Image (cartoon, rainbow, N blue to C red; front, side):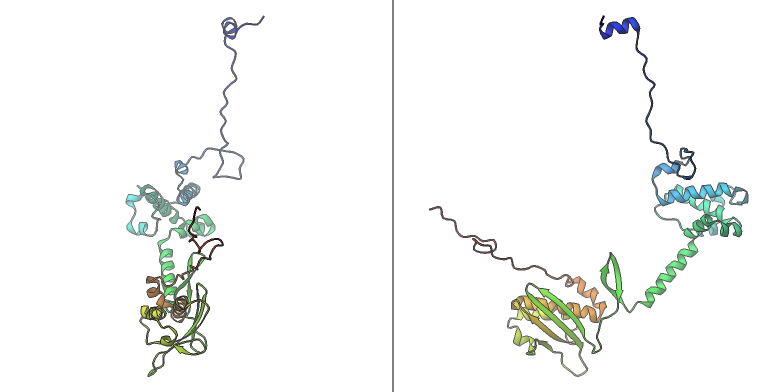
Length: 306
């Protein structure tokens, strides 16, 4: 005989429920990964996600527990430590005040160990070297020495996100070369230093036309000599240009970018001045082609209904 659920509950009582089982992911034993015993991390700092500082603090505490009988340390905490003991260590700025105090105290304790223990245990020697102020000073002095050695070279190009140092690129005849494009125009430029008593010259193509003969409009002439004006070198260089294709405007701008590159190759220090006027970025724009069935690239014929 079928009964409703409510009557069966009244007669027989509530059915026995299965025991509640909470499904939790197993904890990873990050302190001792080789052991099969899994235990909850004791360090409260583990849950703060502080990265490298957290890891170093945990390792330091483990090492202090390991070598506790051999540590003299500072009785009474960091307040009783001398300024010399504190200044021995450089703590990263990302660490909080509590973490900075803990790192300094742990490093002072580890530093009080015997030299034989420091040499034998790689973890101890690694932590002491990592936060050592003396090592940081040696590193900074090494960088300053390297910078002074390569002071004659300056930054010219950026490769893989890093500024690469390069020397001036001049051939055996003392010429610096630059090549650039603008629309359809292609320009190759060679610059040389003007000798004493000579007047600077700007010659274009194999006909050796002067700037005034080749470019009738003053605006185009100004484009050509603009990079020389920027670095204040109008009377310092002879310029020979080979240019082809395109119109006079695109040719003048192609020569301008090519002279800029030649100046950079001759003396990378010019980058400081050239970069301010943004001559290092070429203008890659081109004339858009005419579309079939239209008057131009975008313009269209007048539409007549009838």
